[in-house]
Amino acid sequence: MLKAVPPGFLEGRLKIISLREVELAEAGPSTGLAEFYKEYPLVILSQDGHREIARVTPDGNGAYRVALPPGAYILDLQDRAQKRLRANPQSFKIESNQTVRVYLAVDTGIPGVR
Image (cartoon, rainbow, N blue to C red):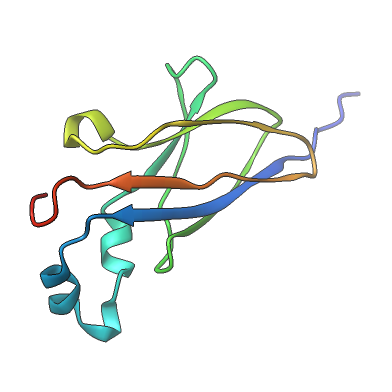
């Protein structure tokens, strides 16, 4: 009989650098950064970076949490190269019943340019 291996968890926070102040003001207090975080979905890739394992969208505060089977992975921005965003993909390892914290920053480029 095979026993299922309990998952582990990835959690962290996405930090957006170089947001245009005008966009934040236009978003208003009720929306704030929540709408901007939706523009930067994250992708979890296999250790070799060739296979997508999962996608996760940060919440209104940039926080994310996802359950994953034990193994080695890479956290990256979805379509980072295509959108010309600067971010350093982060390698991490998941162990059963453990939580790993990985933080990712995205630089959207020169202030005022997206």
